[in-house]
Length: 416
Image 1 (spheres, rainbow, N blue to C red):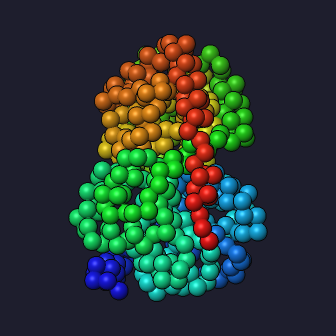
Image 2: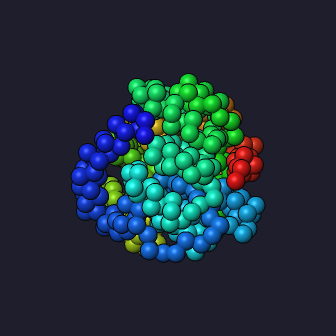
Image 3: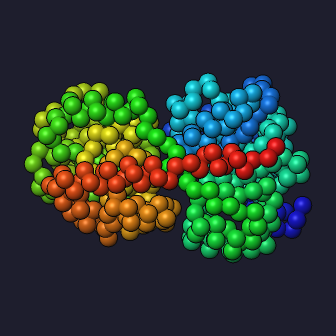
């Protein structure tokens, strides 16, 4: 074991009590965090089918991004089963919603050598694919030691993450070069990965472009819009992060668009109740999606407190403000909105989707603003100019269509 990896592993052991406390703390809001604890240490009871291709998607966003890749793997390797691993309960729930029993699923263990060894010996995958920024040194080294091909796909490396890894240049280079290959989302991502020492990097594109709106969800969105009234303007605040609702609600309360309906969909389900309380304190008439009641004419806000329905919300909306971009969270995926033909408003913080945001702006599918007030002002302009909104929606559809094809390119890279 190299000195840098030894130091990393010792640090992991030192942080183990904190990790267990974190599970307990998160379980106060999401009891599912205390389920399948043994899996986090490499203990599995379910028999592993063979042959098996392993795909790791840490949470909800990565799991959705993995969907077209998994379908392409199933098409190209029909004799193989797919093992989909996660780190969060919401990621696991999303995998269940997307694939049902069509894939195997479990938690990837913490990056302890003993746990990683148990995982690999139990499942015996023929190939591993880690999505986006899931660089786990002991996982990667164990795969390399077993001559198991291990790839980092849909790889992204923001400037912020690059600076963090650059503090440990020898270790970063060691980890990246133990990967069999890296499929980067963009030239900028590839450049930063090469700057950290990676040698086997190819630019493949973003898997999220290969996600097409689910027909069932599209139909659900159309049905909602019919129930709400086609003449009623709909503004969606999609995947909002903590603190953003506090910025948005005062602006939304003053937004003067006749008969406007506002949808707020928090990014994390554990925040649904907290956001509901904020809306109540703001004194705005609202309903919760989970109540399953028809939307009343006097209702101003619908709280989207449901999982797996974001495409339906996009399909039902005239304009979408993308959460995570108003405060420095790096933004959430705006490709889904474009693929649904929904005009996009983004804030200044888009570093997790920097190239996508820039391309969407250049394509005329999005507008960029400086803050929450600017976002509401831009949304108001689009809501009052339906012709411009339709033009942006059409540009988004073309933008999403033009960049598809990454899943097939990733599968073409694999050698096992």
